[in-house]
Amino acid sequence: MAVLPPGRRGPQRRSQRADPTSVLALYRRLLSARRGSPALHQGSWTAVPAPDGVLAYERRADGDRRIVAVNFRDAPADLPLAEPATVQVA
Image (cartoon, rainbow, N blue to C red; front, top):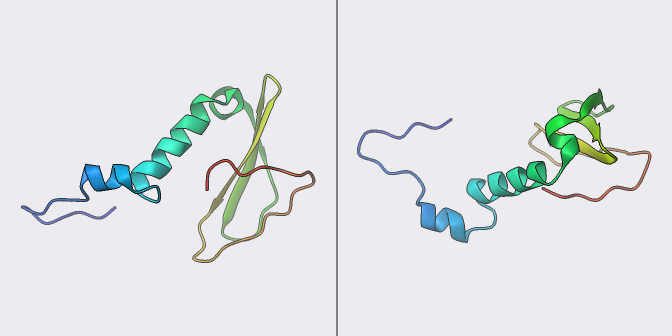
């Protein structure tokens, strides 16, 4: 986490709100996905095979199934899945 020197201001909230690629926008999409999914806040957890540098797991609850994948690499990664899937937050 970056720390700003005294007297310096961080990113302006207004510009963060207006930018769909901002960290604020990403957090809002993630929170919205979590609120809308029983699996993401109370489901069971199962690891999903993934390439090096990628964390992937499946969550299930009340008929809701989600696969969460987090890429820690500096480049895009492919995650082969057994079934078709829709990307909700990227």
